[in-house]
Image (cartoon, rainbow, N blue to C red; front, side, top):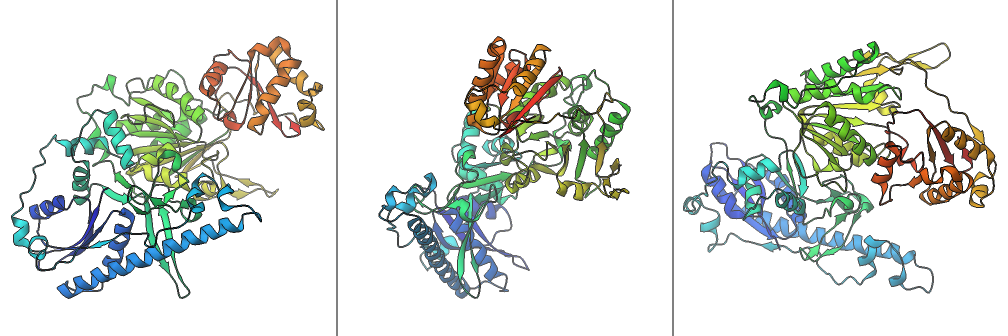
Amino acid sequence: MREYLLYIKCGTGAVPSVQTYVTPSFSVDRAFWQEREGGVLHVIGKTSSLALAFFLREKINERLRKRARVTDTLVAELRGLAAAKVREASALYGREVARRRAELYRAVPSGQGLDRVDGGEHSAHLRQPVPHKDWFAWEEIACKETAAPYLSRMDALQAIPAPSTPEGGPDSMVRELLDGRALLWEEIGTLLQKRGVGVDDLAAVLHRQVLAGKAQWLPGVRIDVCSSWWQSRLVLTCERCGSTGRTIELTFCHSCGQGCAYCTVCLGMGRSKCCTPYILLAASGSPAVRRNKDTAPDTAPSRLEWTGSYSDDQARAAERARRFVANLRPGLSEFLIWAVCGAGKTELLFPSVAEGLAAGGRVLIATPRKDVVLELAPRIQRVFPHARVIAVHGASAEKWEESDITIATTHQVLRYYRRFLLVVLDEADAFPYHNNPVLYRALARAVHQAGKLLYLSATPPRYLQKRLVSNARLTGRGAKTHPLFSATHVLLPGRYHGFLLPVPEIRTVRGLHKRVRANRAVPSLTEAVNRSLASERQVFVFVPRIDDVDVVLTYLQKWLPTHAEQMAGVHAADAMREEKVLGFRQKRYTLMVTTTILERGGNHPEERCDCCWRGSTCL
């Protein structure tokens, strides 16, 4: 069980600086301050809850800001303050557990036991008795006469030798591996194992980076107390995804031996909890530092080998986006490429990606859908053959590797921190990114301090239009017309070949859902699909629910038996999802029944007919 020491460091200069620190390795702190300006270290106490230690640090720093100098009397008061805050947080934590337990009781039907209520997998502990009088443990360490000479006087500190950290040692290796990443403690262990790096004392190595200002060491879930004239309440916030409120589950942790909340929103990425360290290291230095000057121009990662060509409108849009990436003017950090479906948005990115790579930076292309990641990765690799391109999604084996270009789902972006000189968000209006504050936060945090964020969308949401598309004018009919370009956007209203977008034909069939489930004939559906298949065109049939995939697939195979072997169905939970989507792209399947996972982002070389099943409506 890891413990954290809380101490106050008082400088010895003409204007002494006073700051409270949390450390997992006090010997590292002593050596660090010995190497620098020195000071007096007053130990306050220790706990195994990282979140509690950070909560106390903030409260003590608030008190120190009101005092000009630190005395032994003040230090004693601060120890008392820490103990009082621990009791308050423990009482509020217990009260919140009791309140949630009472709500669970109220949801129990009369005569049914609480242990039989299905409150969800995250509420199991609430159905058990609450035996904990003190939810948080805190051990006060007083600077009494026996301890004070060693822990709080400079002459004792001078006697401790500083450990050497040679260049190329574990510190530099870990710093290089974690460059631009935001990982939980367990994820760091996985990364080091995957990369074959062994570190004897990882806590000491990481904490030296924290003291040097190169990294942040935070609790997975932060604790705070919000006080008002009426009452005080406990506020729990996930440091990784920013979630708060009822999405944070309260439990008693067997790892730290006390109250320890965890986040349910980002649980699929690993358990972020009060006692789990969350380490953030921004990409080091200027992006240009990463540029290898010995690399020949013919093999540089930024070398673009694309044999296609732009239309005049495409060329202007691509050049404006490239200039945005190349512009070093502070404050100009977001740009929108608003292009109609089929306008070649991916190809418009190529000059911007090359510009970001040429500047020595990394490039991230984020998209809400895993299927788009799998499609984009080989396309980008073909046009940037000398760049290292990886595809990062939940089941990806490449998520721990280094790359020049990273193509990732938006959820995986949670693991990056100030890493990419250029971040591109494809399909900014798509689920699950749209209206998801967790993913908004993750994407913004992945951009390097000197980086750029570029949005791609055919239908950008209103908040992006309002923020990046200016000077919209009203026509005589009351409709808005938008300018074709500005410093923060470019609008491409036509496709590269000049043909208009096809307008779907809407056919309404009464009782369609019941007729399909009863295997009754629906000529308007089967005849439209058969015409498309007979014309050697591929067909998508979209359904609103996963349960409908097999039903509609079986129905179409029965009524169109000559094409039955070339039909397939796929949804997000399908174990064969990747193989089926690839088979459709390779034309092994001519008809695909699918949910909205393939609604957007798919590119197929041949013209196709889309049939959309929406409850009782077929398009």
